[in-house]
Length: 251
Image (cartoon, rainbow, N blue to C red; front, side, top):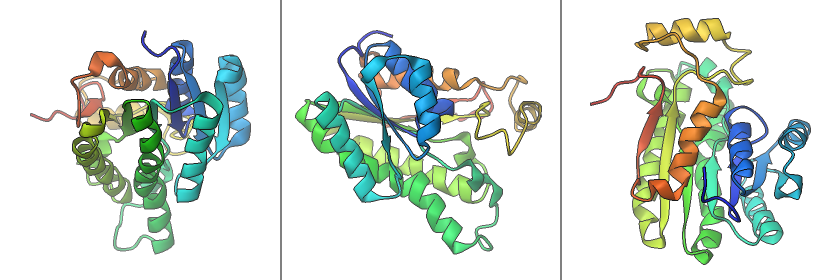
């Protein structure tokens, strides 16, 4: 996709899975990218695999920390001169194991929301000044069709993402910053493998209403997100776009 040459992006959770595909596609399109993640060794392997030279760098970032988010934004500005895009992708799939909001340990509750919900806002707050200095930008948040299901703590965190997306889309419009979200269905990522096999994901999707037995490759999600970042989506704002092969139908 054209239009990314000379641009600068931060991808949280960019070391693997959907985040890695965002990094790869952005780098291939000519952007410079900061991988904001906590897993340095996996990020290093991703950087080597992508082979974009010094246009892709790693910054250890716990998005649940305001200070870490601010430091990440500073690295992007200092290293590449500014920030044009933010992909808020970091998450904890382990949250799906906690279906009871009444019984979940409160330390786990706060940790999950700290990363999957509050961390997104922390990153947005960190990058907005640099985006404003560049004349605007675009943000894509990773939601999930789980936001529309009763899946306990995971659903709650993703509902927060949806609310955050539409509110920020309104608030940041005057600064020429567009905010949208992608809501994936079942995706064959490394993070999902300990929880569910690809075959189990296919069966779960069919039971949940998907008309096919396909499980998405992470790149299929990232390509949709790249569209939302691009100028081709200049009139798209405040939308939660389901990329789930028709599983979650909302009219």
